[in-house]
Image 1 (tube, rainbow, N blue to C red):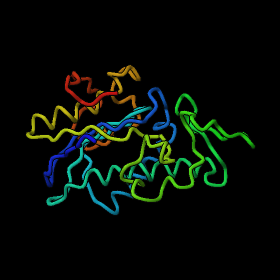
Image 2: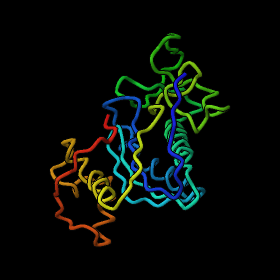
Image 3: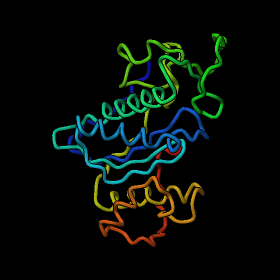
Image 4: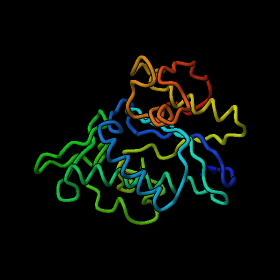
Length: 219
């Protein structure tokens, strides 16, 4: 088994890319209110400063600053992922109502009496998926362990070293919906921290600056 190492820095500013398992899904924007609730719940228990955040249909980028002495960003992401997944499933009637993930990554009610073949790619009749050592901190593609494949198992991170890099990564978040062709200019995308930053006077509402090219773990 390959080792997956993370830098042991505390109080760090970190850029993240977090993706759904299904390319082309729109689950994050379809259920963005559930995502907001998940983030708020995790922040209440484990504080973090959001320097930038943008939610796209099948992935999101964020820049966080953790408190000094704290390096537990992986645990926070695990909690956000699992809280979001539980919230989405509850909205669709789980656990009383069985559901599936369709080919587009959307949650669909299962027809009464229908059971997918044992080797089906996606299933959600999962009574054990939020229990045991794999719950919360390691959600994602573990169908063999009866976990729901909503999220990619890992996320991409980059530790920001200086103010220029911080500014570039924040601009990257602001401009990402434009980069993906979802809107013509950044303020048209509703699920972005650019709206907060415009209100705070950190950037002009007409901002259409160049989005930095960088290795950002894009799906």
